[in-house]
Length: 432
Image (cartoon, rainbow, N blue to C red):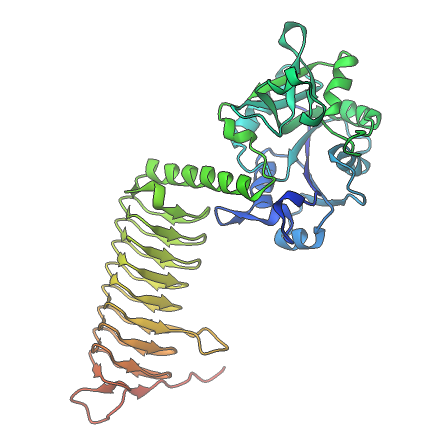
């Protein structure tokens, strides 16, 4: 099997996005576009991944974790996709294996499709194999021109297409695999497009056909895989596809989602079997929900939240960077931020952990089987002991604690049937 290297093209300005943010950093499913494509590239087993950057390259580099396989290449002048490949070619001198080329916005490409493309390319010993898809509205896409025997002989960009060619519904999906010697020979023969004043990588197919090189294509089963992202409208379409895929995978793995049309779960969230997600729920990335939970309707779980098994989070609740122990309840209109809850805790309607003091986010600790009464406010940092009770509407002020089994009421909160009129002051731990 020939060695594989991958080039990701992400240098363009993305002017139609009308944004100061580089196109490949716009999020879909809670992750930047470039993260999806980089994960795809890593999944191919490529020894090195060359990321061609131009506009906003510093921001994009900051968004990627350092990886030993990643190489950054700068395209100094933004003269099109063929010129971007030329920029990477200098790093691949004397390389004779295969080169996979991906667009930085190809986030809907499935790893199974990519694997099939590589297999076909190698099995047929093709000089070039590229992905196509058939869509009902091909406007804006390069059309696939086929010659004798149905073989692909060119990709015609829409601005250069005849009226007849514009009716072709098979379009270029922007995914290619080349034998490196063929790619780097032909890339230098591409002429500048007189209309766009750019070098189109798509022109390489006609050049390869003229030289009788073996060209193969693979049609994607899912037309969405060829969806490009050039506008905010395209971004919304991609968001819809990714959301449906995430929800489908969860349902196939035993999660009940009562209304997928109104449910949002970000990429990277983990949800256990037999959990029920009710309508109008938002679950962000880096959230863990255990088995047998009930979430929503109208609930938001923000990044950094960890929910144990058999927890119920009901109507209009928000949880942020919080850990909730098994069999705890939070039924109505409450907010928990930076809290640590034990098992079987009850959070009453309207209860709030006031975690932000204007400078820092502070932590609230609530012990097993504590009962937090309706409209209680816990001004963090606060400790509530196991089986303690806060009365409805009470305010436990900053730096105080409610002892295990204790009961507090009022504003500020004070112990009931205790010698001291206020909760104990939290002792600061000595620094070691």
